[in-house]
Length: 98
Image (cartoon, rainbow, N blue to C red):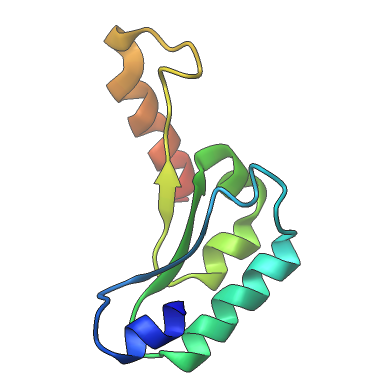
């Protein structure tokens, strides 16, 4: 269905899965295969997955498979004080950009 939506011109970016690594819904290999399948079917659009930053750090091959990176950050759920939330997100984002 995602590919059909893209081919109809109804998408600017394609996101394959949302936190599937976090929930163990797919393996790294399965997710990369899905990402590659979508990239091949619709090469004109950026393709990525979205997952929590820690999972993306642990799975650099998934990050490399996409054309963009869509990390989810949840400082509140990690017990980070609101005073440090932005700086924590910045640090974690820098880790992903290496």
